[in-house]
Image (cartoon, rainbow, N blue to C red; front, side, top):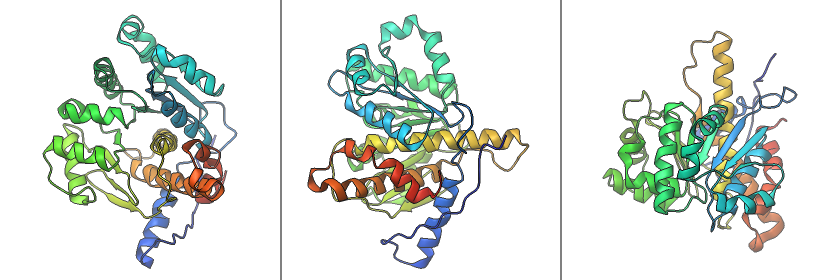
Length: 333
């Protein structure tokens, strides 16, 4: 059964400053589009993703991330959240699978069940709506240790990034790690790593990735969000020139995490398919291409939503535009 198909994508950015960058952008998006699995296979083969987060105060963030993953095209999304947030998040959508078990006392009793759930995931997002309470920070560290030991591709955002900044050494050595900081979060990470640099410095981004590499062969991917998103993983850097809409509203980062989780899952599935087919040249998932195309689709969805709602656009307006943005950027189903 052929699970993945190669496609060629031609995307012209109005913000391209020269032909060379446009060509590089097209090539990068073509790399990302090749990760998309063919529809029609059995349920689960287009990706299983978990969103770990939420709190009594912040129930919208994991919902937005989970729905963005589904709207991008994964088959199943599990939301692991505290019991205090479970009913609220569950009421938002029947399409998400909920596990209101994110507490130390519950996970201590259901450790094997939780690890079994994680083992089935192709990618995990942790942080949206998590909160910064002491228990939340302890859970962030302990769950990350499990994800690292299971070698599950992991995206850290929002409050999980705050947890990283408080104890950076504890988050070393996970080659499948992706961080998605905004400018404030990136400054905090630079300070924790004792790196003096401006947020848009590729050298500083590479240094941060190297700081978190530990004993892994490659450093984590840093996705620095901004007007132009900057990607760096210690070996490769890339700037996403798409700018999105002028509207800046809470929840857009959660949607990016959801879209990125889909492409991260697909990069893992593509690698597994290549390895089963006997390919030897692909030794790690293509997270840079996954992030580049995810950032581009998210910004395109923002532009499409803004065209309809203008100044009144909110993050949930972007969800319905994600499939259209996907079609425009990827160019196939």
